Figure 1 (cartoon, rainbow, N blue to C red):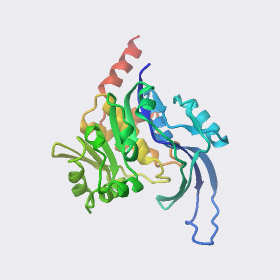
Figure 2: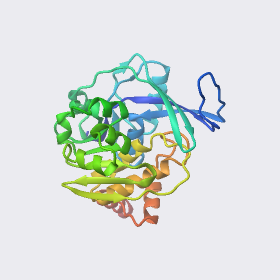
Figure 3: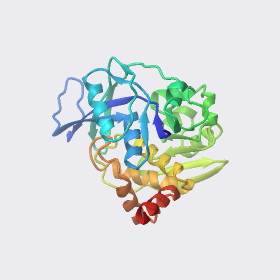
Length: 304
């Protein structure tokens, strides 16, 4: 069985403190109006892809503790395939949304991942962070993401495997850290020498993309942001969904920006992950038609 997308980065347990009237300072306590537990990290990408109709899996081991049991159940309830391998403890992030942004504190235990672990799941595509890109198997399409710590770590030595990626997806801050360039457009141009296609997300301003020196820009969609946690992960999931479905580079950006905008209007990373029907309906309002692969499948289901 071939899996459409395998996510190699760790799944987190996100603990979200919603409704804060400010972020606590040193020695200060703030009270939230709500508290939720939900999957985060690599689990967000996998759930986002699964809700859009892709077969999805996480390859990183889950915790053998109670939090890991919760994550496994949540992932499997979304149709995401989980590995049998476990580690002792679960990766955890405390999320504090406030004023359209959020603060986070994270614990992430170390774990091992190899190309064989990923290849064993027979993926059509793999998504990995820059720190794990050397684990990528050779055959599947490779999509690469990057966080702050990785951008700092690899600012002077980018992994050569990035040259083989189908796309690098990175936000403007990380792109500047990785390249030393101040503006998003300048950072995009510098990164375009390292990966065949680069996508830089710009938050509420949308996203830009470059391949072979040609830049594409997609403006953002104005919404009232409740919790921006996971917006980049769901941008990535929907971008890959559109790419695997045969969408043009311009359409990939449109779908991804739309999904990210939809996601931030409710708390938690996965809370706003749209289903295929929800994203398709929203897409109609923006002049978008389902990518060829999914439109053909929908017509076959209707006529069958």
